[in-house]
Length: 298
Length: 132
Image 1 (cartoon, one colour):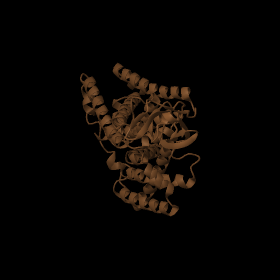
Image 2: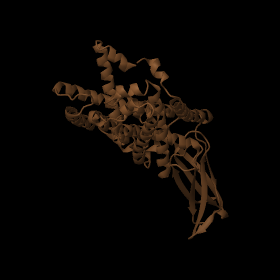
Image 3: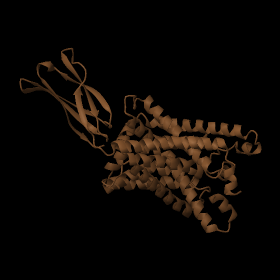
Image 4: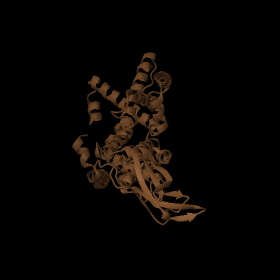
């Protein structure tokens, strides 16, 4: 609805600019999640954040800023490349801000930052975790530019075959999702972080993790993609097809995560089902993000 | 293209997949809610007991045990000790630590003694845990 509304009211430029700004930020965040999530599930990075001295944090922050600035000059997270120095500087700051906000949210979700965490430790964790995240934001342009709807035109042209291609496209999407999810889950499942994080999770936090997984997955695939978004929304309906796809992708990712956990002996059949559930949901977050990346790239 | 026009184009198959997908995810959410209702924020309830027979090999006596968390929440760094009292005196001691024992989960381990535990009194005990 937002898009068609936009198209009809080109005069309403201020509002449009804000919507574009929001979409750009979401695109940046999506790419940041793809880059940052493996390190968000790495306890060594939390520890560095816990022990770092304020001076070290400042140095990390500054280094990060310089690298992000250089990347922004060539890549960026907007549809357009910043040519002016001033724009690049502004975008670099925005990139860092997106990184801070998103890593802070995930760290709170993973219960690595809570009300009892000291401010020094919390800031340290956010700064060090946001480094890969903001690098991801800075290269969003080239990373998320994949066109995942090349077969889109075929679908609309022949109605008799549309059902068939639709099913094929769905299968291809699910294949890409499971590859991406397995790829990420494979790197995280054998580590000690999953049982560690799952242990600290209570049911309300698990529910929040499910919600975050679905939201991020939806954001990466249906808001952040650079190309053919309008076309995609037209073809597949406004609303419920993307939601269905997000839900199915989440289920596929959970399965991929469970498979990897079982494969690496993190779960056994003697474990109670609550352990399976919490482990699956904890690993489900990065797996879903990997799955979303798979659907964009493949 | 209006909203309602597009909605009518949804095929039955799409609604079916949507229904199945959403019910599975709802099922997962339901499981979380069920586990919440069932165990809630019940703290860990830890129990240790000897499991199986004592076995002797290479001059040592092997005492297998099972450690279970019958409560709801997960306990981390669960410390278990074994004391072998012979003639009212503590002759030997053993200590072990278990990481991340979830509610309902059971772990197995073994203590080794150089004297036969059957000649004395064996005390297995959980001495503490940490909140994860």
